[in-house]
Length: 90
Image 1 (cartoon, rainbow, N blue to C red):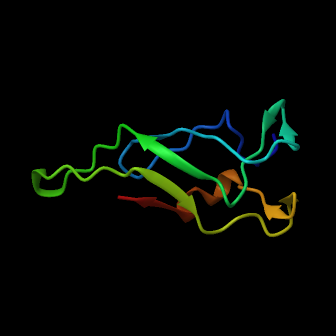
Image 2 (cartoon, rainbow, N blue to C red):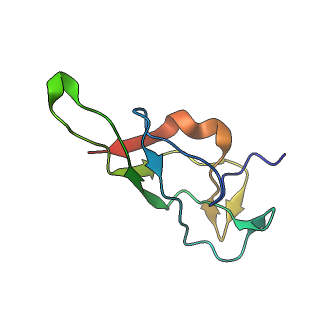
């Protein structure tokens, strides 16, 4: 299995919210689905983050680290093993 994330992958914020995966990549497909790249930004739905009872959900996932050896249209691809490198924006 190729470890590149695609629009059919499942990405979650640390609090269980689901990222809605879209990409600017229209050329590189993995198993028929467009691959995700470092510059993609994903809205998050269903985040349950509520410290002290105050609801402060994650709303976006932005990536800070991409693949070092795999680029798509000169932009680093996103790899499954990089899941901890995502930052959820509130």
